[in-house]
Image (cartoon, rainbow, N blue to C red; front, side, top):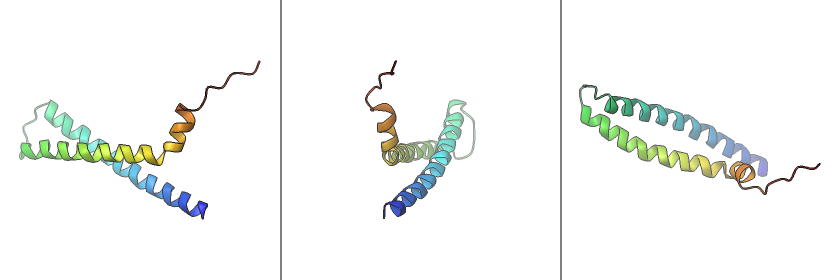
Length: 85
């Protein structure tokens, strides 16, 4: 059973990572439009997309961290190894 659960986790991570990347691109594009004060039609909608996508982005990042928590623990919270001389 363990192999199946791991495969589903990997598949979920792959989907989350793709959506996370798209969310980042949208966030960067809307931030650029807002920062450069570009005059575009429906400018108010850009602010709304930026705000809603920001919430989605945070949720995706947290999900990404939860799904990779084993790696995070192993690499950042593992006891320091003393080099053997």
